[in-house]
Image (cartoon, rainbow, N blue to C red; front, side):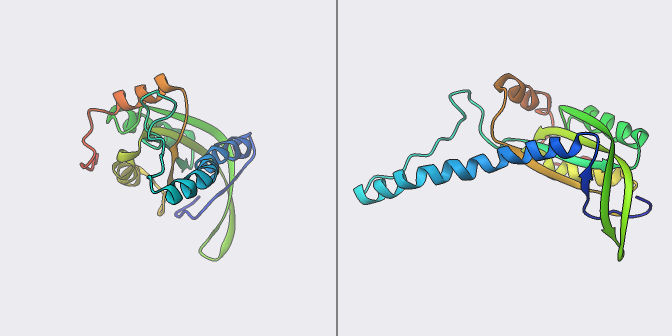
Length: 177
């Protein structure tokens, strides 16, 4: 995208399938809350407070404490530079680069289509604001796409590793280049 950036629809190269699969788990907390509704109503009638799970299946992982952030870049060179920088600054534990996605978006009154690289960044949810500021400081687009989704479930050792790798960064500090 030359000079600008608007919302993107991602197509091609399996990226659409990947993103659709990533969105499906985002619906699970809503469904699980709906399943708890009858129990909550019953406990309200009995006068006792409803119980809500605070950790995923005894693993010690707090659902939503890790996020997967998505950033689109104009090419692999820019994506690798940003990926290395966020990992070196410990704003992310891991960045996957998904090449050759097609983004179709509206920008300044015109429908545009560009080939891009999608970055999938794993970080602590509390670091998303600092990650966003840092990516924006390096990114060539006028409006960089930086969106994040909380991870509700996953491989517990991996999720703990994400926390461990990003531990050295203060949640409240903004890390700029």
